[in-house]
Image (cartoon, rainbow, N blue to C red; front, side, top):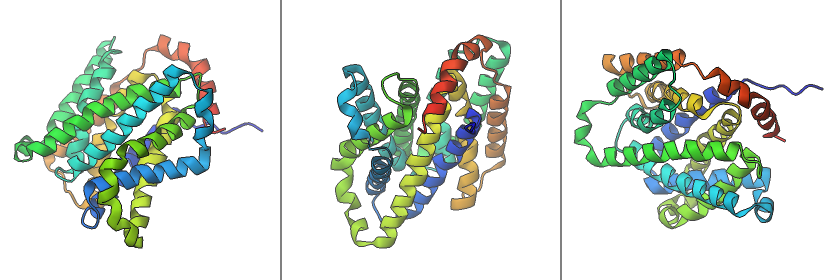
Length: 299
């Protein structure tokens, strides 16, 4: 029987939706659990789900040293990125943090901007992010610092995530599962004490677990399935959709109503994604191996 294979862009859309749906729910939890506690519970829940689903510890002994370092480095990025991201959205609107998050990522896409059309796409994306980034952010300098740190780490997440997705040593989702287990240990010293109140509050604990599934399981698995079949530059520019997604979710879940300037920024960001065209030679070179890896991720 032929296996149903979805286009990689579908996986990206799923990731884009859940990438901010979970954090929007997390913002509502901050009144009951400290920010870093919610961040650790998110990572720990995802690690538990992956442990039951993939049993990734069985793979460690078979990995070579470079792959172990790659997964450990990715785990450190996941641990710190999730923590500073939550510290940022505790101080700034979700759409604004998403806009700042996008800025370093566009540099990755710029490496593949070989045509006028792709340059126009990058210009539109940058202009959209500029409009989405409110000039009044000077009122929250610490929030900007956390958002900027998260942005750099998110760009690194994409770079390392692509290496894992295309690794010959370990399947992308298994690599993600193993890295998430390590990330839960790395984040433990910062998160376990702030998370302690959740262990006597079943409602808060269940909500935090839901945040973990929505924020770290569904989107990160979708990312791996998309990264295995999309060139890194194409994926990086598609990330420009995230500020638009975050703005919409911010309206629906958190009633963070956008201004006319915000809406204009969203339109420009989406236009940049629509304009972007991947390099045909790169697509042809990667099509065979990438499609094979993408189909193997769920085995």
